Amino acid sequence: MENAQNTDNIKAKWTVMAYMAGDNNLDGAALRDIEEMSQTGSTKDVNVLVQLDRLEDKQTRRFRITKGGGYDRDCLETFGETNTGDPKILEDFLKWSIERYPAERYFLILWNHGGGWWEEAKSRAVVPQSSATRSRRSGPGISFFRHKPEAPGHSNHRSICYDDPAGGDALDNRELKDVLARTCTLIGRKIDILGMDACLMNMVEVAWQLRDSVDCIVGSEIEEPFDGWPYTEILAYLTAKPNRDAAAIAKETVRRYIRSYKDKDETVTQSALDMSRISEVMGKLDALSDVLIASLDSASGLIEKAWDRSPKFYDQNYIDLACFARNLRKKTHPDIKARAEDLLAAIKTGKDKPILCKGKLGKEVNGTCGLSIYFPEDRINPAYKSLDFAKDCKWNAFLEAYLS
Image 1 (cartoon, rainbow, N blue to C red):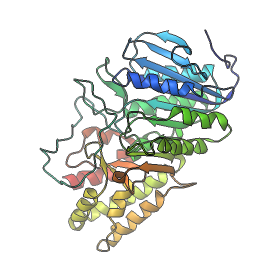
Image 2 (cartoon, helix red, strand yellow):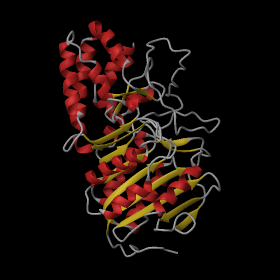
Image 3 (cartoon, one colour):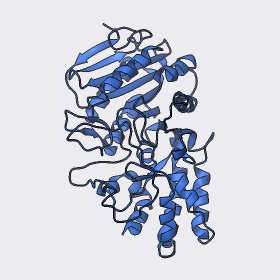
């Protein structure tokens, strides 16, 4: 039975759509997060919707979460096993949400494990080498491995919203881009906020892939702790301030996420990105790539040291963009220094900047900007060249030249 209004297409201020891929080792975490959501619940101005695919009973359920309700009280529909890595399943949920609970603004949350841009196409993926077999560039890299998949028989290297019984299928970059583009057509404009309660998703590559479908992205550039987002606090702000715009909600999501881990001995990052300005980062990064390629003969040592000294994530495949740029600034290479300074100026945090807000806890992430980029230690995943980013920016050409 329907548990709320909006069945007559009365527009709310916001509709939150949480796509929870729990058909894996996060099944129990999904129930805890739904309980957190029910501490605030939906209001006349804010719909809190969930689609959850569970590992426990092989069922998929849809909810409109109410205050004091939750998993046992708020289920609207139950149907059989679904594959959260199938883009049609996500698209059906978004269409259902938008048609039954229309709103002035939409906040989509992808909830699961994440792997940044990484794809594991059967014939294309290159699994990173272990530290024992690396042949090139050893350094004091920082790696975090929390909130990662532990299902036996499945690789940890996948994009987002993976499904164990479906063989570890996940939404790859092309699928996610296509689904969100069709969703924008349905609502007649961009999705206001894309939140990724998953690891490693705030990357230049991911942002560029989704730039035409989303106004703001909120996520982490490193592995998230198992508890993920503090939904009670985030929804409390949204329901109290439903007239705030996407940028304000995105920034407050960052702040409340960071605050929730204070004094818990966790290393965390979270940032909010303005997609209307991501092209500014792209332009400066393209220029830096150009000069790095031109200077390889004389600057390879500088590049190696900059990589070594930058925080690294995901088995040393991703690095923080700002830290890398800062480490490139040497007087002996004035052209590189100038382009690195330009990039740093483009990724400063603040109003009317590509990075609207950032937060972090832990000495391992000192100096990070909340935005990472792919820079593997020795070999390039062949799937990388299929990304929009790799086609539109010379960074891929730089990696190929440098790692060869």
